Image 1 (cartoon, rainbow, N blue to C red):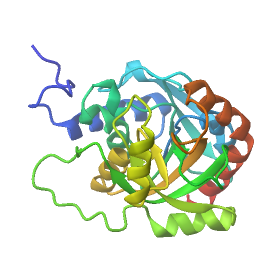
Image 2: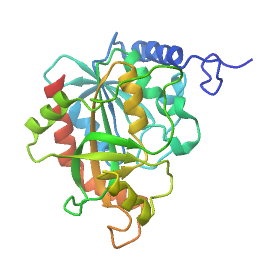
Image 3: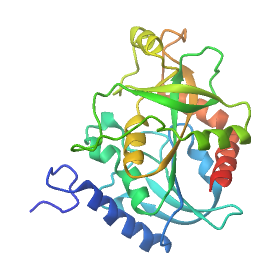
Length: 277
């Protein structure tokens, strides 16, 4: 007999699995609801400690529909964090399921749906990415104002014709810029991965209006909007994209750029979350 939490089974309701995960999160964290959710992408792992005090942790293995972390530099735990000075809680995901892992779209967006089921009204999606603007050196955080979803997939099943005109919430981007006026904005392009983009693909992304290239975030943002969450996206430029960079791309380069940028990114993320909570 198939598990009622098997997201691979087309008969399973993915939103019901998210509700089940949210119930376990509430039990393990002793919190009826969490106000804000944060997904920490490559290079952002150290930011969790600056958001506030971690009151409880939950392993992915203990939650319906979740999987262990599959990428170096990510954590397979969820933290329940008291947001400093606000009396509110943040649900901080130390990893995400990437499209290229082959687990299906439902698994990719399950954390986002679980956050919504746990009561979150806002989600902050972070990632490490390649930059198309040579002026954005590795270590530069950039707000996402829009995206191009080049996976040719959607997390929405059925005739739910969702308006994505203002997917990346303007009010949240303005709050982020009030926190750090140096922040610039760009269009994020999600490729399927796991290989890096070719120089020709990067040129294509630029012609289409892209500024940042990566392997996450867009599908999650769509699911977040479907779940009624406001969305703030922040990319950390960890390297110049293929053809713009003059040397081969490596994942350890992504991790090193994240470590170098951790103090600034952590302070930025903590200040933004405190402002929007």
